[in-house]
Length: 250
Image (tube, rainbow, N blue to C red; front, side, top):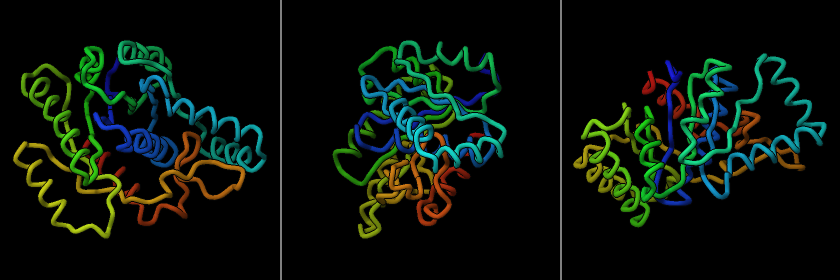
């Protein structure tokens, strides 16, 4: 049974908005740093990006002595395993949580969902989320597409009482510090008029968000086996975002 477990989706209709990366960063930080028990259901067919990332992470951790040592030290210290990543689809996503919940108490299950709302199974799965966070960037096409997607969820699911959704939030992602703040103010006014709350914290546009495990053995930021390296956290706003989300989820 679901019980106290929170179902969360970083979801948007627009591809390339960063939902998969944010899912991994938040899930890993909650699981490996904050001490929560987490799982990920990867429904983003056909690429299943998070599952593929887990395969890459495991392969390098088994073949490279540096990462093998990091993994041994981390999992021994934490006395917990890597969080599960389950391959699924929008039709089976909720059913695929049942085997997980029967074996361990999970605080959060994150769902990486495809970016289209023209799917009955996707709509049903979205309706069963506790929280939906929509990453959005200051681009007219992205804003319009995402707002249409989120407004549809709000009007057809939340406002009509046909969902379990407790919170629906917008998250500024890939923010370029050189952009004029007036641009964001205009968009935020539109979201306010639509009744769509925006998270206080935003994520900057920085290449570190794509830094995975590699043979160069540089500090890792995006990984399903490790949290973002402390040396890369400053200015990423990841810590602050996770803390804000924890407060919201309470």
